[in-house]
Length: 145
Image (cartoon, rainbow, N blue to C red):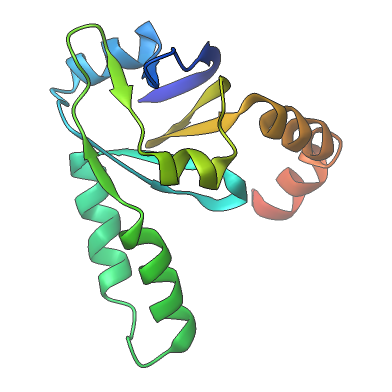
């Protein structure tokens, strides 16, 4: 549903506009509300409400008697916030989420099928350049014929 890589900037009021393709995909799938939370690799994860509920059910099913499950759920859910884009497709990210991802002004929004990731531009460039060479190796290990 969400695909591509788009460079944008946070405006002086702290708002970030979703790329037109993401807004079109959301409209086509009747998505009005998103959940944004701390993501892995120092980015933010953005889920549609439906996808968030699906992920939430999986993570809530993890045993709370396991320390790693408790820690992960605390990290994920304590950072979560409901977001409804305005009529221009802009969202306002809380300061604590921007701090987690190192977002100041320039960002890259990345469509990862069932979610959107928001990266500080410098962190995305760093991730991309360090991962680009191992992409084929990773594909070989993960993709079974």
